[in-house]
Image 1 (tube, rainbow, N blue to C red):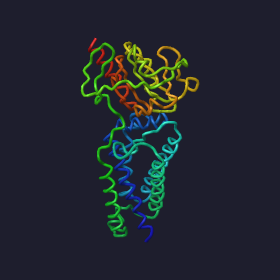
Image 2: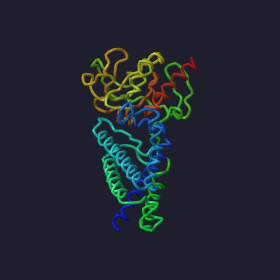
Image 3: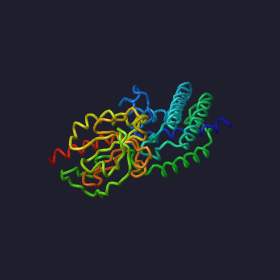
Image 4: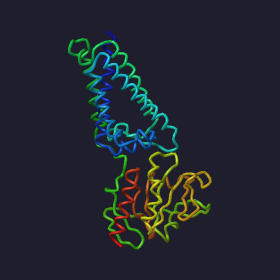
Length: 333
């Protein structure tokens, strides 16, 4: 029967939910960052919610397969609500000024939200609707398999397709954060710190605009004092903890200037600063392109005209990077 054939939708969604959960469990930091980057309401960003989400996905995935009757309908409604929320979040994120990594599948598969992400989530939502329709017509998928009403050959084909996708996407992908633990130690001003394998390139002479309206170059900016540049955006949810931490970091790192780097001019940003240290405005996007930056990012410039660390990307990795710098400076002074 056609309805029996449609149970393939429940099978596909069950695999998607389990794969998504496994990816989140493998990369909890990326999942936590995604909640902030997607600007999920604060009450839903708690550690309990972040840690519980993959387990909820596993439970719902199993329920789509083993639960029937009215409980099956409830489970399918919950899956429909979950994928509706996922679609709403990625559609809204497409309107943000900066690219967002959703970490929708944790460490599995690509994370950056694109138009394809929207279409993918739309398709998953459609499958959730079909799964709900199937749930209202009878027994659970497992029961249908046992009594022979479900098309085994179709489900086998779906399982083979899902396994292929899992094998292709399930390899270790680049983490959402470049962790400070993996970053090199740095050299700041007159403080000699072991550089490890970090290749210190010359600071590029990229023209920039300062918060007081004056212009200079990145190389001139760091000629007298080391500079810790924090690339952020007011519309970036992941940047919030970095921006809030700047006053503390300025107290912890008196040996260098901690400056916010913004894409818009001084008159267009509430984060613009005319007090020392002045904000840096990358109005032409030259810093963004030179260092391949994302929000939030950190770059450390030495006073010797050479890069001293970074770029470091992510709202988890940037604070770790700053802590690393502070620890190294304390140990070498």
